[in-house]
Image 1 (cartoon, helix red, strand yellow):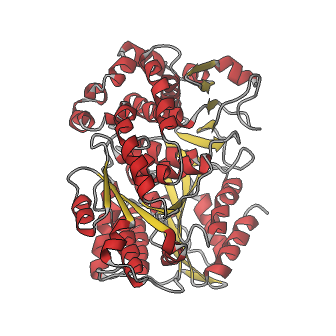
Image 2 (cartoon, rainbow, N blue to C red):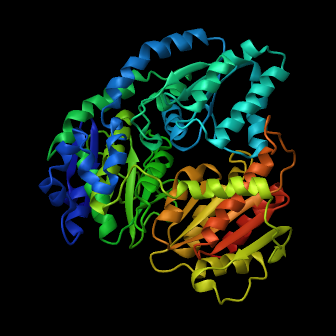
Image 3 (cartoon, one colour):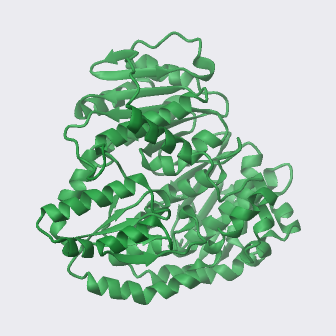
Length: 557
């Protein structure tokens, strides 16, 4: 174990250990942990005190603290899940149509526990088409939306319904292929009844990003073959520790996140250490970014591929590794020296991170349960679907890649870039002290997966934190931080032509039109804030992605 981690000590309970947190707290001008204990925050939080985040947040918090002990109420779902699994035993291909909090936790659960789950959280017509073409005769679709009005999820439901009918199923047979997870009284519950779908109602006092241990996390995971009761057991074992002043890993983690952010480390690198927890960073990214990024403050999570990837360290970065349990004498970090390491069972991870994020909200003085800026891009999308996309002329064309430059910040007076390499360099050079670059790819995250390699390349070239998100799923996570957090971001948006479109049944637009409107609406929201946005459009995705990657590699030479 490194000297830093020994100095920071270890705090653990129920198999979950947090290393190094005390050292991070001690570096701050004033101890965040001491301030939290002075206000009796641990006990008040486990008692669901809605006054912890101030008077303006009280009404919201009063109906959003069910996550604290939702693991108890979720046990009531277990018999229903067993019956549902038996009823649908002939359908062994589980597709989850959901966005953000409705999809990220089940993806972590099934990846970590080695179960197969197709997650559909895109409007890319190629990705949707591929999902529908995969084992349709053995498919059950879990449609998950807390509000019941999520446009992406509604579009997926419509596309699968039409596909089932086109395959020769009756409406009754098609209805049996759907399991709807939503809040009581949502419009989706009514739609499900009309379809003849199975319905599982979620805990209404838990917000989407805190819903890992509710029906949103458990239903698709159980159908995929996960023994979800174990996750509830792991969370329950941790719960008693969360009200205490010591031996409280949730408090240690939350205090460290808050202390770091108030002491200049307002980005947190989330790095898997290779010990068996797969994809937790993507889930924690949404939880932290959407909960803390508002009112001009926030913590920016930066998901790092592995301990050797660039962008995991920096003067404004808290380096954090996560993973499963460690054997005695093992060194946390998986090959990197973290400032904080979190290790333990997955169910305990979920509850601890939710608790820690709420605690960080206390330290930062923000409401961790609202998302005031998420609707902005949605409203822009709806408007553009009605009026048509804006007419934009390329700033440059480089070997088939079209570049559109929207200057902002220090780049306002810079000459327009004439090629891809120059545009990327201009974008990086404009990053301010404390700034970050967000890459937003409105592509197929499987067929165009290599596009993700731009993140480590740009991080190595810039020496600054670089995030990567697949559109539109990031709109339900870091999209809140981009608009509501510190206005220090620069943005690289990657779009591509669609080889074969797909209609959204019953709607006047297609998936390609919806995807294009989402991308245009989001870059409009960012440009209106004076942020620099570079859009790279790939008329030929297969040729365009390698060309962009070559240009990124050239930035380091």
